[in-house]
Amino acid sequence: MTYRYSSGLWEDNPGLVQLLGLCPLLAVTTTFANGIGLGIATLLVLTASNVLVSAARGLLIREIRIPVYVLIIASLVTCVELLFEAFAPALDRSLGIFIPLIVTNCAIVARAELFASRNGVVPSLLDGLGMGSGFALLLAGLGAFRELAGQGTVFAGVGALVGGEPGAGITLLPGGWLLLLLPPGAFMSLALAIALKNLIDARRSARLGAGSLRRPAQRS
Amino acid sequence: MSPVLRTTLTLAAVAAVCTTLVAATFLLTSERIAQNEQAFLESQLSPVIGSIRHDGGMLDNVTSIADGLPGRDPARLYRVLRDGLTVALLFEVTAMDGYAGPIRLLIGIRSDGVLTGVRTLAHEETPGLGDKIESARSDWILGFEGRAIGNPPAARWSIHADGGDFDQITGASVTSRAVVNAVSETLIYFSANRDALLTAPDSP
Image (cartoon, rainbow over all chains, first blue to last red; front, side, top):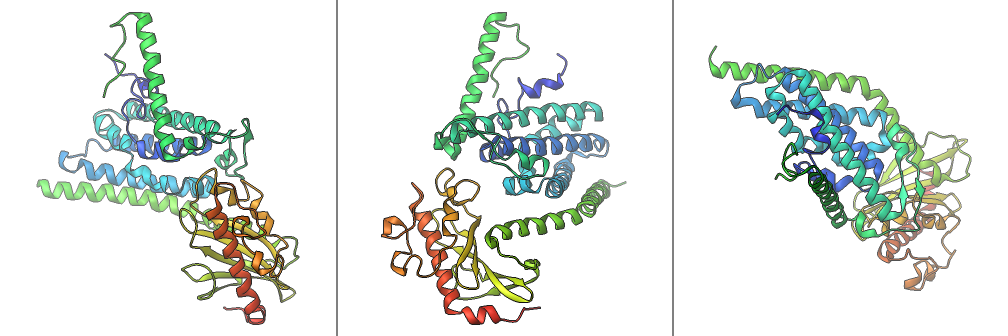
């Protein structure tokens, strides 16, 4: 079986399948803008950390690999936070503590350990892009869903993504189910997303006939 | 090379590279970040000044008041000057009795004691209910404009539920009460110390 870099988007999605990085995923996905903002920050850190870890893998001694990952990831997160503060200050304020907390996103250290420390720079770059995009798209999707169902708007605050005024977004529904914006709604939305993914996988494998899938739909 | 030496050198090298990376990013962004912070503070101050004409430079005329205003930490006071005279004062106070935590407010008072505006700077109130104290989410906070001590009378300077003249936000009366009370306390403080506040020399 050859490794597919796009697997992070669907069958190995860090959020939907590996269930990694749930803390930021649940906490910031109250709007599409917040979700995609943190998603992009995570994507940047993950890709850069994969590249650096992979470049340094010749130097790595087993015993100190974890401190090295931590150093690399922490530095990259600091850089990304400075860049957000400089170029998207409104988004930085809106995401608050969750940008520094990317350090603790286990999806990043997991890719460093499982992939980047064993593969070349280019494959690691692609793996970071694939996994990071999968995570970012999930964050954006959950954010959009919770924003629409919870307060009836779409794209509230997207202006902050490009460093401008946040903006109030477009109101599509008169109101929403407030619970979806609160922490329980985060769990419910993620559960719905996972259920939807499993349903699609089950439909697909039923159509193709069992056994033709590359891997089982549900791992855990 | 002994293993200990090798691990030490590897870690030192990685640390040096990472520190360089962070330092370089910091140097490239620090100026822009400082500008952003300044612009953000000014953009927060301007709505509470209302239509008063002024000389600008409020951020250079900041003092702090240790006692007498809502909040645990000393309140910040921005002085709005026009031709060297104080035309309005902006109080940054904290209502400690919000529903989910402290609510930081910026309250603008003209020299004659009339409110020029109130804005919420930071809060932790419930999304969808208490967060209507943000001017971006509801017009509620704009209702303070033009109010003063005696308008409404002191007995009615509270929310409807407490027999006062101010609407409460539906589902967030604790939040509304906290904001109304903080504004009222600030107004009372201003009227009690009006002369001293308006003539106080600028602190360096």
